[in-house]
Image 1 (cartoon, one colour):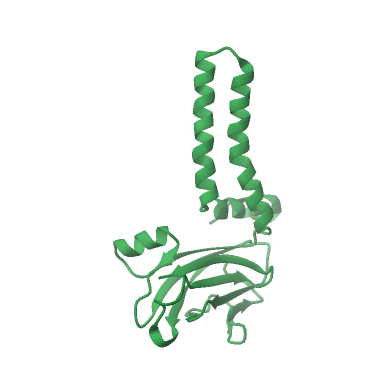
Image 2 (cartoon, helix red, strand yellow):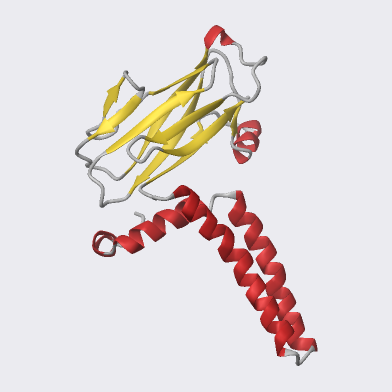
Length: 206
């Protein structure tokens, strides 16, 4: 569950904030800003211990907060609204799969590769369109139709007008035309929120 059901249904601000945190906490901006902010916090503690100069201490605290908050605000503005959140995992096992996933990459293996995509939806919405596309020479198709969803070949998307499950997963089949991607520069698979015209995630295929 993403949150307490009663709060989730009654307070849209909490829904949006939770979905934002769920997405932002997986970004490089969050990781970098948290690390830099920690340096300023440690610095402010050191200043308070060795100096009575409140101005230096206050400056370090303000910088720690700004370094943490400014990237979060920029991410929120660039990626609004937060109605649908997607994450993925490789279905193949082994150290190579784990290493490439950490880099947001999927190792392609003949005759096809597969990935598992986890979807989280705001419980206030009643319908969704999840679109799938890929750079040439890749082709991507969902292998599952979760809940009341229907696969539309025209547009290569899953459409649901009556959501019965706001958290689910689906499997993707990724295949290369002619079985060859070595000569293509960093082809990617994309999953989009069709209603809000927003990219949910992209996966680089090696």
